[in-house]
Amino acid sequence: MPTTPSGFGRRAVLAGGLGGIAAVAGGSALPMAASAGPISPANWPGRVRTGAEVAAAANWSMFTGQKLGVISNPTGVLPDYSHIVDSMVTNKNLTITGVFGPEHGFRGSAQAGGSEGTGTDARTGLTVYDAYGANIAKFQALFDKSGVETVIFDIQDAGARFYTYIWTLYNAMAAAAASGRKFVVLDRPNPIGGQADGPLMRPGFTSGVGLKAIVQRHGMTVGELARFYDGEFLQAEVGKKLGKNLTVIRCTGWQPNMLPDQTGVPWVPPSPNMPTPQTAQVYVGTCYFEAVPISEGRGTTRPFEFIGSPDLDYKYGDRLNARNLPGVRFREAYFVPTFSDHVNQTCAGVELTVTDPHRYRAIETAVAMLVEARRYPNFSWVHTGSQYWLDLLSGSDRLRTQLDSGMEVADIVASWQSELAAFNRQRAPYLLYGHR
Image (tube, rainbow, N blue to C red; front, side, top):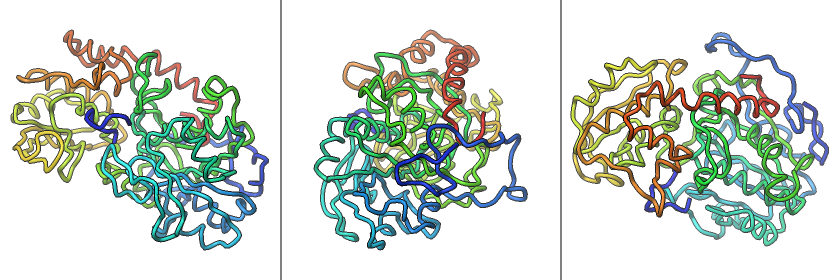
C-alpha cells in the first residue's frame, strides 16, 4: 500500500449519545501538556489504551440503540488481539448493520491494490461491504443500503499521506456529513509519532493516494486527522461539517514522541507489506522507490527496508553512508524479490537500518537515496496514466524536477519548509495529544 501503478485506482465530551467517557474528544482539544524529549519505559505515564479499549471497557454501551456500521480491518484489535467486531457482536444490545472493508479487505486477505469484495463474514455472519476505493457517493450508497446510523472507524494508520486508509476515512466522513449520520473514530497512536514533515500536496495532483492538501508525514493520529478534515475540508466538499456528529474516543497515556514498543499497543500489520512498526518508520520515505525501476523490497522479508535492483552495486551503500545522514546506516545487501519489481532477479543495493529513530529523517533520507540512485544506468521515472508516479506520491512535480536538475538534498528539503510551517499552524487547533 499504496498500489504500484499497475494497480493504481487506489476538550469536552460531545453530545450525541456518547457521553460519560473521559477519553472522548470532539470540537476542541482536552488540555494536555506537551512532552519533551524521548520517553523510556522507566518513565511512562502508563500503558497506552486505544480508543477501542476505552469503548470496550464500557462494554460498548455508548452505542446501544443505534444502527452501527464499522469500517475496520485486521488492525482493529483489543489488547488480547480479539477484533472489535468480534467483541461487539457478543453484546446483544448492539445492532451492527454492516462492516466496510478498505484496501486489503476487512480480514486482510488481499494484496496491495486489492479487496475481498462484498460478502458474508464467516465468523460473525455480518455483511461486509467492499469499500476499497469508495468515493463519497459510493459510501453514501453503502450506508443507505446497510441502514447504518452511526459509523465507527478503527484502523491503524502508518502516518503517511499516501497510505490509503486515511482517505477511506475522509470519504466516509464526508458521506456521513452529507447524509446527517454520526461518525465515531476509535483512536490509535501514530506509529511514527507526532512530527509533521515533507512537502505539501498541490492542486492538480490529487489521487487515491492523496485527496487533500496535507504534508507527506502528517504527524497526526486518525482521530486528529478526522478533526482536521472536519474543520478544514468538509464544508467545502459537501456543504456541511460533521460538527457535533463527530466523536473521537481518544487514546489514554499516549504522547507524540513515544515509539511503538513503548506503548504496549498490539501491532497487527495494517497491510501485507507493513509487517512491523519499523517498516512504517521508513515507508513514509522509501515508498518513493515505487516511482522508479528499483525494488522497494516488496516480495522480501524487509519491504521498504531493502532497496535495490540489478543495476545497483556495493558503491550505492558506500555513497549513502558517506553522507552521514542522521539516525540511519546502510548495509550492503543482495536479495531476490518473490513478486513485484525485479521478481526472481538478484538485486544489489542496501538494507536501511534506523539507528536512532528520534534523529532519523525518513523523507530527507529517501531524497538522498534517489539522488544517489540517479547515478546508475536505466534510472527513469515510472508513469501511471498521464502522470509520473513520484508526482502523486510527493504531491507535485517539484521533487522530480528538482532531482532532474541535479539539486542537492539540503536545498530540496529547504524548499518545503515554509509550507510545512504553515501546515503545523493549520493543524494545531485539532491536536489532542499536546502541541508539537
